[in-house]
Image (spheres, rainbow, N blue to C red):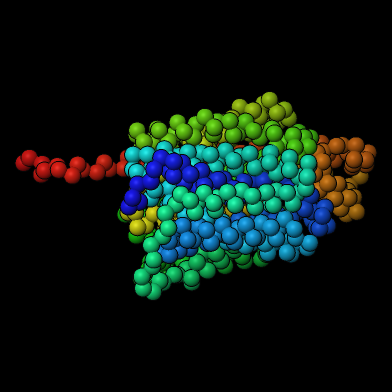
Length: 520
């Protein structure tokens, strides 16, 4: 910043940006717990209900880089407030939606609003805080937002059970009023823009098509076989759009995403890779954990949300400590150790799943929260401290795109791994099970009951004697699916640890102003 703010205004800046960051993240992690109620309200199936989550996540991921670039060009506070207004209005429409299509449209607009807000939070903190305190402030914001995101399932389950699923969306409105008020009071107004501003809308469209195509195709593995055109065709379209996006950005005069910037700054590249992998684990397991707790451990949604609190406790303790760790030694060590702990958590969870006991899962949940807390707390300062101040908005947008895009990809990939592993184990076990083969009518009845059980918790008495004999092979098949999914997360975390160790270095310390030339 050009004029350093007072301590009081800095606190307001940190509070408002942290609250905005946390609110957007909670909006994603609380939604899986409201889906059964949404299905009941609008009389839809689970495959369609998943788009309540993806309808927001995909535009959020696809437009984050554009949001960051708009902040650089038009003013970060201005774009942040515009995004807040859009996010708030869309939250109100979503919470009051009388039809499912209106809910989906509002969720898309929520994602667009979040894409304008999220990059600005990091860029505003970076510009307002002096370099000596920047790492601690960014770590506090990232860690607190991660804590809030981890509490999302608890918030979603509790509000849905006590009030309604609509309350999960409408609660954004009073929070946004606080965010806007604090921002207007504490964040300095943007300077007037001079001259014509060029924004790469074609690049933004190509990036959106890339993410939507790949994620949509992978998500269809829950409906169609892997070799079906409904699966591979969207993936091919998305991959083709991704190639065109890279070619365009390399040749553009004012690119949406500067690949040259990624190439010049290893820390920025390392943080971007780290953010993507952490997002895959965070959002992907955010969908898997409730299924495990509700359907296998027979918890109701509120209890399942409370059971995930141990993933947040390490974040409370480790987020501020990680910021200090970064200020002392840079990002390489905390990022690498964070991913190694995350890899360990996947192994612990895979070993614990067959025990069908929450106490066996607890060490893995604590390790998962610890590793994720360290990585998420240090990603933003590693990224932003690596690039010139004029590019901080773009850098934060790319970093947030990596996390949210990784999150959308993680949901699709990890659920596809779970689903395909589950089916590969289930069919042979069903054939070997005693009793007559399941007919299509019984399969349909079983599916309808399972959808209802996602809202209330699994009760075997709901299935009847005829279907109960098939619950044991179904539970065993799901156990294998969860274990394989957790081990895939371990593999992703090991890739993250290797990338952090190879790419990330301590940022260079600026030379003293009066330093003379080194002696010959």
